[in-house]
Image (cartoon, rainbow, N blue to C red; front, side, top):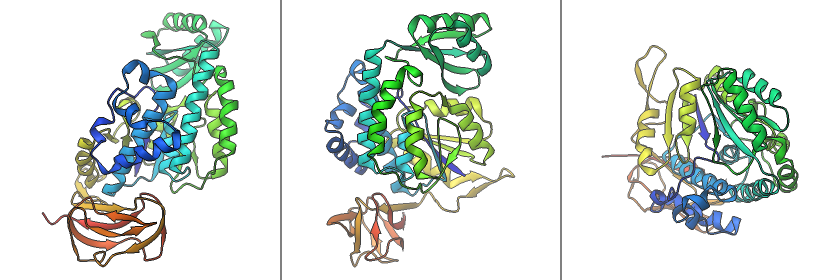
Length: 392
């Protein structure tokens, strides 16, 4: 089974949106700018490293880049059986699973980034990575240090992040080294995220969460707070609020996904941090990352030719390297054109129908093998409309 994973703050880098500017999925950036009340295109393409590192910028930029990449993956027909995101990436996972509307998610991410930035400005905090020490020993180091320092991220075996007041973090890091840690080093962040120091941000975010509609997911989403699969929409406001002051249980998330039979992990968004953590945590899984359009063909190859339990390479049942999906550009009623019929030869740019007055254009050439939306059916953004098979 396939799980899509989504990175959090820290994976951003200057100019990460540039490669996507000419891709059809870039249209989401304009929608994000309208929802956030900010120039997201400039944030993704023109903002320097120092400014992009600021929490309110890093979170919005990372989320939107992940959603652009997801939209591109969806256009190819790749689908996941579950979703999971690291910290901020949980919002990407919820949007991908249909729990959050895209515009609502942009507004929540914007509020979350602003709230966390304000909390960090109000109370100085920092984070440090502890390497080569097991989880329990890192927790003991925090308790022995006293004061205000806690475990913030269980990332992978031998990789734990602590956070809190700077002096207390330094003291816990020194104790961790005494207990056998190979390294314990400060991270270049502006706050003690996922600790009680984020309580003001949690209270502020809670108001926005209570005003947002949450829907039942199309596939389960694994939560950071408990590393468990959740399918009840009503649980997510509490989980997202708790997440700000609770540790991210990513190692436990990866282990639970592995035990549940998810053998293909596709990291969607900037960077390959989660792919690296998966390599350290689970064995035998196929790991793929999509951060630029250049990664899309590699994804198709990886999903179309998966090894069987006996090790033989077999064709995927639902995705072939020669197949492409045409998806809806928006929400509304689907009205097909005469060209939208099985067996028709489709050229790039052909209009297959209209949704809420917007054209459903094919980004690919090929033979139309099937129509996946009925005339008069209400569809959602990025919902598959038809599938084509390349004739070249």
